[in-house]
Image 1 (cartoon, rainbow, N blue to C red):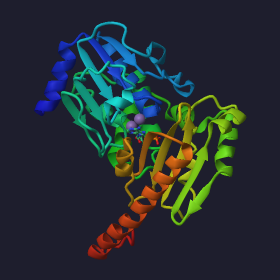
Image 2: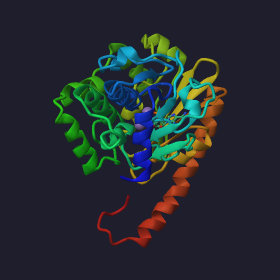
Image 3: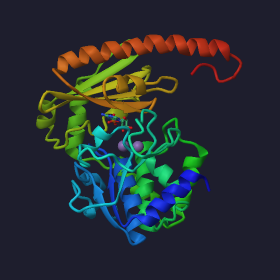
Length: 335
Ligand code: AMP
Ligand code: MN
Ligand code: MN
């Protein structure tokens, strides 16, 4: 076993009071990773505080352990673990500025903010990293752990259809299925089931679609949210619809927030990389999916973000062409 795995195993063995933290605006990988690792440590007899500043969204309340999640630590701890976060700001300040001991993540933009940084950017989900290594780290994958981890993998891969899904992602999921979980059920809960309000909200997003060349974008204002009766402050996953529209390379969504803030999400077709542009705007993510939260007027942010995104379309088109010219015999055509 490598030194790093041995170190993590010993950390788990030697700590009794453990805090696990993930990001604000929790998604399925965030919730599934906190609960999957948390339940595995609880089953090992540890005292675990599972922390999400924004709590567990209603769509993930069916997951084992979700009722144990609290919004900030309420007891002392000797080990702090951050999962599925590329930077500490995204935890929403729940660790009060303390440096975490362990950072487990799959974002290429991860800032290595902890004492021990276990970052595998090629992994499709943080939950896939946990599935791969939990046993080496001395923990067991029971059915309740597996339900959480499978939800993380299903969510971040949009049901195994993102470009970073590998045979290993499927094998790891198959190992989780061996514990007896119902993948169809978890899939339905994580990705298919929608409220009527969110469909009304999608309607607003459809009405607001704009395009320019290979770029497509839409805006969801607070007024849209109110009129639709949608109670979340996110895009209700509308970006996944927008990014499926034909003949576009990059999709962007602007979601107006209170306090003059705007959440921006980027999605890119294979061959493009939007992680660096998100980083440039103070956010982060993956080559194909990234996000940032910006302060300012919606219109100003749109102008800035759209012109910077158009620029990467131009620059990366040149890079992609050079790569194609250099390897024109690979038989797969372009991108
Ligand atoms: P989203 O657009 O929020 O669905 O996020 C797409 C990807 O970018 C996810 O992997 C997020 O974890 C990441 N991401 C989104 N917002 C931020 C942010 N403000 N800082 C760092 N990473 C982010
Ligand atoms: Mn996440
Ligand atoms: Mn993730």
